[in-house]
Image (tube, rainbow, N blue to C red; front, side):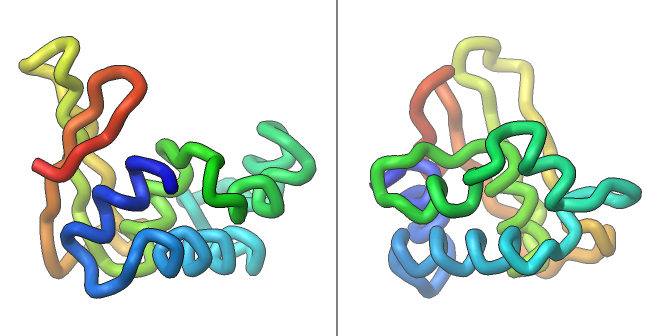
Amino acid sequence: MSCLFDSLSYFLNYNSNEIRQKICDYLQNNKPIIDGLETNFILEMEDPNYVENMRRNYQWGGGIEIQAACNIWDLRIIVINLRKKDKYIEFIPITKNYIYTICITWNGSHYEPH
């Protein structure tokens, strides 16, 4: 499993594989990641088989998956960069309305719930 999906499962009522598949379904259905850009366009810039590859348990998740999770579950997700302790990235749903805020850490190659 991927540490990102494992970290999200700490806060959500789903196991990490269910979270991965819900995010992949969201992306595959071309739901919006960010305003003004087609999801399929963003993913094809990365890899034409992006969603197919992301469905595999060994594939690491990142910013695209974090933003999709925000949009699916109406979350604000704060990612704290452990390499620069005063730096963080805030992800909010495309609607700008969120129900909960969760926090995860990132050390450059690994996510953990915070």
